[in-house]
Amino acid sequence: MKIDARKKVIASLVFSVLFIGLIIVLSFTIGEKGLETDHTMKNHSPSLLALFGTDSLGRDMLTRTVKGLKFSLYVGIVGSTLGVLIALFLGILAAVGGVYVDRVVMWFVDMFIGMPHLVFMILVSFAVGRGAMGVIVATAVTHWPALARVVRNEVMAIKKAEYILISKNTGKSRWFIVRKHILPAIFPQIFIGFVLLFPHVILHEASMTFLGFGLSAQQPSIGIILSEATKHISLGNWWPVVFPGLALIILVKCFDNIGSSLRILNNPQTRYL
Image 1 (cartoon, rainbow, N blue to C red):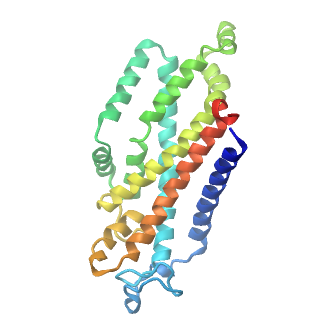
Image 2 (cartoon, rainbow, N blue to C red):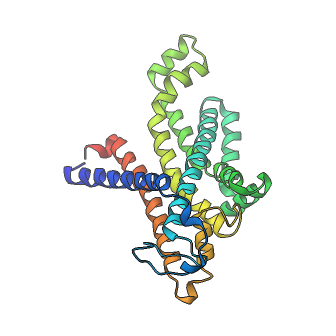
Image 3 (cartoon, helix red, strand yellow):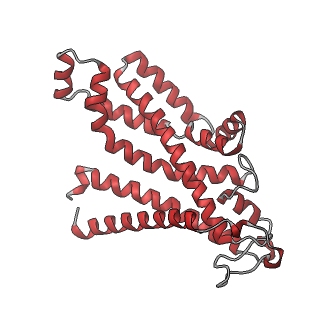
């Protein structure tokens, strides 16, 4: 990679990390007062008193946006972690379990990929009991198939390596080989896959809450904020839609930038071009 291109990748990575860090810091430093209703402050446009304006109940939109992004990050972390664990288990199982196990796991992966994504998430959320737990479980069990394929292909290539064949010939068990050789070798791909799952999980969480599935109206969530704001945008109140929506887009793009940048920097074929 040329020096200028490498600098752009690193700069994009640093900006994304700083923005996410800013959201995390603000989510813990901003109090809950802005979430309280205040009918004397209804539908105020952005000003020094309320940088993102206020909504129809007089709640501060900056506070609601930051708290909503905090919930999105929480869902993203838990949902992506569970999704990665499912993908890791099934991907490794398909690669080292033999031909028949591989066929069964790949059939299972294809079945999940073929399901209508958002509809399946809504059904899972209802089955679990809705609420925050329903959203987390729904995002976790629907975002692992693509990563499972990647893990399976990576392990298929690695298990033919000479050092793994030597370990197998010396009588080492499959669990030992997976734990000592395969997992350390695929960890960078797993971590990048974990980061790249974030934007998908966050967007689908926002989609579910926007449609009214999952969370109560009192829960700070970007999807709920946008759903409420669409009822008032025809009155000229643009700020409850623009600022939360823009913040969500930037947050998703930041995670996408981090994953893409790490993938470029970790790939030997692009690192030194």
